[in-house]
Length: 118
Length: 113
Image (cartoon, rainbow over all chains, first blue to last red; front, side, top):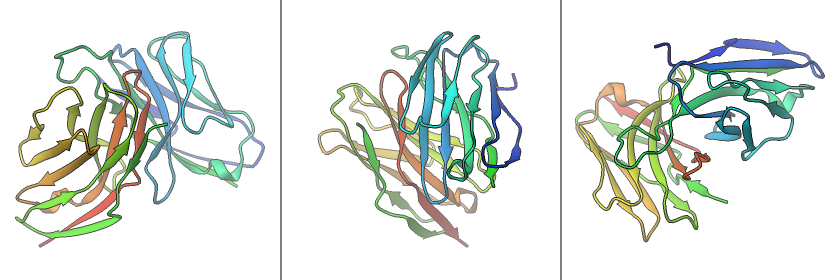
């Protein structure tokens, strides 16, 4: 299993450009999430999905769109990049919480995408 | 909204000694999950330990253990026999049943030889 994969690893954008950060998981997890990590801060939840066709907003959703057409993929779209979106982006996945299952709700993280918006 | 507070931005410990990292959280939920994640310079997020709120017994994983005080909304991490490889950022995290997860700002731990 590859786990959670993210592409690209690093991207430079100009203000106003659009792009999609890709995230895929091969663990058949129902839940997927996107976070951003800014210097000196913890991860902040952008959007998350509890299954194909279902998405919800997290703590800092503005400026980002998501969709979940398959269980495996959860792309994050920046429609018009701004310098404030310069950050490291992490995708994560987890399975449904099952009572007694030791790892049922643990989130597995991808390696991150560094985004620089000029 | 749930909030997670880590009051120690930086800590250091001598190799082989014990260190405790603090975490408090605020929530009105009754069922939730708490985690400690480690982030080395590679930026990879690595799960250290997890605790279900409905369990009274404190979780342990080898040299890592937690002190979970539900009434006080406190979730500290104890690292025993600290090793150089434990040097990293440590994040406390809270997760609701719907997998909405919130992180603290982190504690930078340095293990000194």
